[in-house]
Image 1: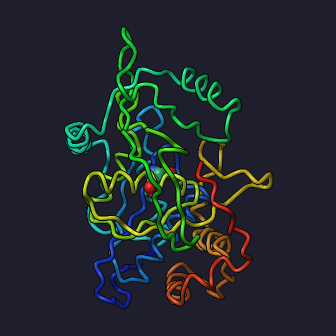
Image 2 (image 1 turned 90 degrees about the horizontal axis):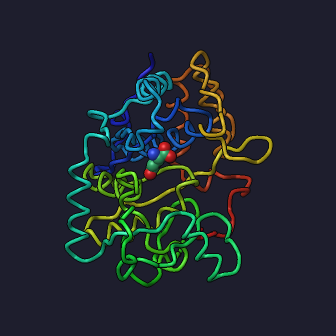
Image 3 (image 1 turned 30 degrees about the vertical axis):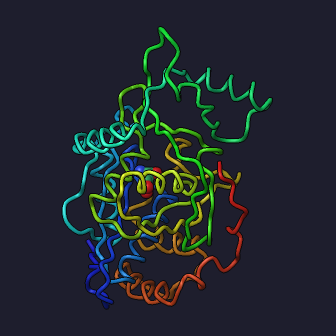
Length: 317
Ligand code: GLU
């Protein structure tokens, strides 16, 4: 096993805390490795610490042993995390506490709408189905209809634009109340929603820099809204391009992306590196990979994304 310690790298004394937060719904594939690589490189480049958090709240999606396999894969790639791995399934009372805080500020309310009803009212209001997410039309905002049972709990999203500077994509803005609407904090099946848990945990773990795949980019404004309402310190964000298959589809566990090949960790790292837009590194093993890659990353992200193919207009949905 090759281990490279982030804190071996020159430190600028900054309190950098990065993290990688996989969902154990399957082993890492070529796409998730890019997110892990970028986040690890960035932590090393800043002389920071790097945490691993298992986002295992969505129990029906968890795959037995996937957490152990993911950790093995990270180790084989030479990525060493600091401290204990945090499992979200052990943090339920923390989510409850933050939820209660929102409730006490009248910022959370029960919703009795089914998905079908939401889709129908969006259709009535807009006359068409928007691409991707359907904004919640606010049906239960001032009380859910008589005789209806609360299914989920939603955040009362304040009006206004949320802006943030993405370290890769530039300045971004989204009106969460308009484009997403009051989003779910606790799902109808009783599971805490990703948006709430990720914010509570990033704050709990003192994460200062979030580096992750562009698929989560559209969640960022929602998370910033929650950070602010809960009075928590915001991290900075960097979203890296997604790896797509030949048909242009994002690689994902859901569409059957293959687990990375542990027999060739260097090949895995090199391919992930190339997909970030860097030139190949003339190296022979995993430990050389990190020694060569970290200084290149330090030189700045202007070296990355050389082909410019990933810049695109922000679609708030
Ligand atoms: N658990 C999420 C995933 O595997 C990542 C969450 C995050 O990085 O914010 O897609």
